[in-house]
Amino acid sequence: MKNARHTSGFAPAKKSLGQNFLCDPNIARKIVEAVDIRPGDKVLEIGPGRGALTEHALKRDPGRYVVLELDDALADALSARHPQIEVVRGNALAYPWTGLAGDDGWKIFGNLPYNVASPLIWDIVSQARFERAVFMVQLEAAQRLVAPSGGRQYGALSVFVQSHARAELLFRVPPQVFRPQPKVTSAVVRFFLLPTPLDAEQGKRLAATLRICFQMRRKQLGTILKSNNIPDYDALLRALDIDPVQRPETLAPERFQALSKALPFDFLA
Ligand code: SAM
Image (cartoon, helix red, strand yellow):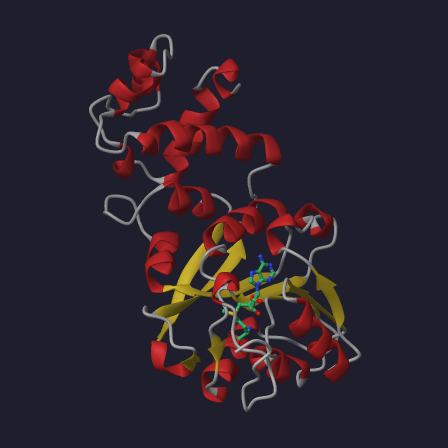
């Protein structure tokens, strides 16, 4: 039924926007505790929705509270309920994260829409400067974010994120605590930027390296570089102590960073 409203007073959840609203105040509190908001802090929440996390976060008396919400109706309702917060209406994937660069100290968090969680975390860890970030994502994505080298879940996302931040899986969240219920389990992951994160140029090189390596993750690294026309690939790998028969998933993030520095610059084009 068009314009149908739930007993909550909100419009029905929009599947296209990944709207699975958290309905368990204990879990909301636990997530907010992981963000560790102190009085006066600068906080940015992604996808506040009906405000399940916002309510708890505001009790901690932050100095600035910015939210990014794509759903205008939810943004309007939140703004009316909490006039003190700064509501940015729009797509978090288009947010200028580098704008937070010169201004460290932000705490970024959210129960992320599942369809955009991984690309969003990729952008945030590589572009924003933050004190800590805490995100709820699908368990499968959480496991990829924290995966060590050598396993099936280790891939481009793991290497890229772990090259910028320390990522830790804090706890799992069952589907029953959301309305509507998702089909999958969720998990909360916390990130702290590394003391010397990669700069934009290094990040670009690493992303290009990961693109070619994980496109052919079952192949050996020597074969991958050869089929990408990298000159002297065998000597290049050996100089980095990488055996050309190794497969991409066996290389730790630091090895990928070293490889991305050694690859010829025009390979990025
Ligand atoms: N934080 C609320 C909670 O925990 O109940 C809502 C979480 S819900 C999983 C995701 C929220 O992100 C929704 O409010 C949705 O409208 C919003 N959203 C979806 N895609 C978005 C995007 N690209 N940028 C910003 N917000 C988005």
